[in-house]
Amino acid sequence: MLVRTRTDRPVLKREAEPTIFRTYAKMLWRDKLAFASAIFVLLAVLAAVAAPIFLERQATAMNLLMRNAAPFNPDNGLWYMLGGDTLGRSVLARILVAARNTLLVAASAVFISLLVGSALGLVAGWRPGWLPTIIMRAADVLMSFPSLLLAVIVLYAFTPGLVSVVAVLAITRLPIYIRTVRAEVLEIRERVFVTSSRVLGAGFGWIVTRHILPVVTPTIITIATLEFAFVMLTEASLSFLGLGIQPPQVSWGLMVAEGRNYLSSAWWIAFWPGLAIMLTTVSLNLLSNWLRIATDPRQRWRLEMGDDR
Image (tube, rainbow, N blue to C red):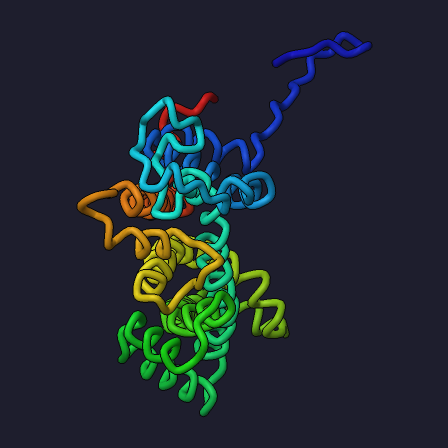
């Protein structure tokens, strides 16, 4: 765009560059499935934050007159639109409140395993010697056991609860990050820009923050999104077996476990929390696929087609 100055000389005015947030928002909007998934995950997070504050009473209040109340009956009121459970509690309110524990366990376990596993993977991929060998052998031992089976054994030996479930799930998912980050570091450290930095005297911390982490972070984020869905399913399985979240706390997996004996007479008690688990995991998987494409410069053009120039 040309503008006139006081000397009447034409000057070329540069257009403002779009921000990273705006760029990714446009790419998300073009992938309608990923956009719908992001909206659903955002609603689940809002429910996890706000529902325990405002709906705790509705989720715990018992009304024996509404025991096993059928869903979609307008006469029962708004909170019983999804039915009532065996104690007359609102299934809808309990699903919204249970989102806190379900998402909190998954987010905490993924965050801990991501930080610890990435740090160990960086050490194992960068530094030679006996320490990387110990780290990788420990990761191999953890991977030799199915994560759910290992979690069941540990939780059976210790007291089940929120903290123990988070700790066990975080430990069982460490090898994924250790092996992935190590493989990335082994490849990145041989590139020209890393070799040049080492020749110029750059230290390990500088190379990691300036060269390695920017390349590894997109891969870690994609894996963490997939792991979030997997950890949430694992927590639901543990709660279903009675080794996860314990009453009076509630989670989606525990709600499914409470309704399994009433599938023939009150199917809605287990169906709705199971549907919440399924929709959340599907949404996270779709978002993970979108992140993989959006953070890969070689495939990002699929989402950038049609950008306003």
